Length: 120
Image 1 (cartoon, rainbow, N blue to C red):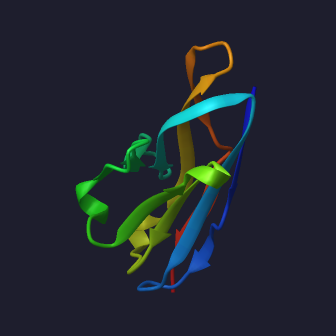
Image 2 (image 1 turned 45 degrees about the vertical axis):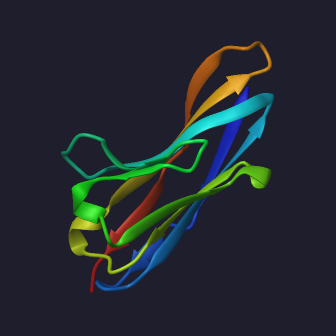
């Protein structure tokens, strides 16, 4: 099994910054893609940013130029640096990792979610 521990959410004023972290642990052979999703009240969960094992990144248009996703493979951790935050960024943010376990199969795992609130 794989455990994901998220941290870094909170309350921030518009224009402020936050950094989210998500650390994976368990019987992992390799971590493939890692990503961040968010879900605002009454809305569907949406992709915010993703990063492949090779470091290629993909961002939602709404966060391009403001958010940066990165990963530390030695720590099995993915980060989301969020700058110039806007009230519309308010949501619960979830990390997702695609891992290959020791059985050789690929699985998706989700974090527990961390609340990000942007408000004055």
